[in-house]
Image: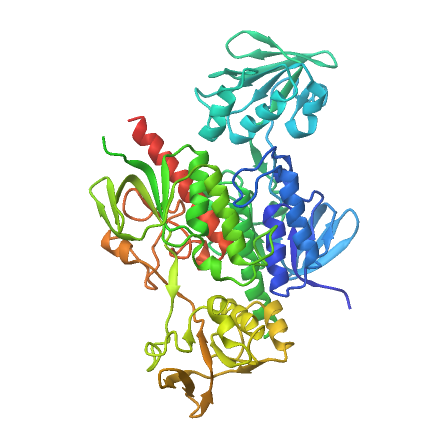
Length: 303
Length: 303
């Protein structure tokens, strides 16, 4: 007989791994499927707000992964291509097919793009969406960071370790990052701020040369890091006809259930936790979803 | 001029300390007030579901405390006796008076009692509400544990390290603890189960001798550990005229605000997180509340 998991978790970030830890404690037969263990949390330069831990994101995510592994939760490094729902969920990845009675959508977000001319052409040629990944290529160079969030502030801090100058370009008149971090930025002699400014175009010939700003001026840069937040990865949710909010997040109720039976969601992808996207809120949502999946499995098994 | 904190956190458990960590990152002038750093989380024998950590509750809570201390958050070991609200909150403890523009109620729960004859009289004379605290007094003795939750299961496991026999007395026909833990209990030769059974009376002359069960029989015991959950500590909330749910929890909205302006709540005391009381959900609620307190403070300061 074909194997059917009690609970398949799609996404291996903080929400997915915490759901896995809880599901394992509930003795659910579960699996975590995701191409990238840790997800966007890996990219955090330093984590100061996961209580009891300080360090880089990848290090915390490695601890989460070890926790899952210690409970013998299978973690499949596979990308889900489609999910079919005929009461049982059939999950197709590039490597095979998995079946489950209930699923958790915890795929998180992907990086938002500026959508300006030159952005696509110069990606990897000076334009980047990941300071953690690419900072080392900008030693003693001048780089720009677009954005005003914590992620943007952190990117500027990382880049300041390498670059000669970091210019933060933000459309509003003050950073919306944590004030503690903004203060650190302001005390960093390598960091400058350009407020009330947008990038209109990115120019370069096979390599980034400059950006055109909406104040009419040009700014010469060796690198441009775009840190303007995430877009929920909801194509799988759409194909399952799950109801989404206007901002494309998956609408969940208090128990992290979606409007489709057997489908839960947790983490940055949902409308939960007042849409405050943190590792701790994602983890909590994963825990709540796992409890509900357990209740559902118990109901099914005693039927 | 008298000092007025931006944000006073009442309660120093996982919710309160996480709120403190977030508030510090937001540069709020905040204080944590609570008689018991760690709260009920300290009593957890072993924590298996705070991602990235395995160990006793007090150890995790010590890491939370260190995290708070590293951000120079004042932590006052004081018991709040009353809170007056005249736009500014005046918090009276046994040691003094503190003032704040907004507050977080994160006092958690206190242990629920059986409410049977003999319980009060024999408390500390064989009757206990804390296996972690009192297990060592029952070396090679026979003890009972009342309850079927994770806390009850954990208490039985702790006691089994010391006692010669542990009898779990539970009103339902199966434990509602995590199945992984129930399996461990079932494999422990020292542990027995009495299902569909209630304790009707506790008998002893200055020292616990036996309990009367509702099946008519008596059971001789040296110790009785009552682990039947918690009651929200909401007397302060009542005095502030905050709306409570039927089960006495503080009703919060998505941003952890109560129905009284400037008053937030987080942790086991609230209706949040689908009322799933875990360290990770309490921490998430504390984080969300701190963000809202920060927004409120920013609005106040820019007025």
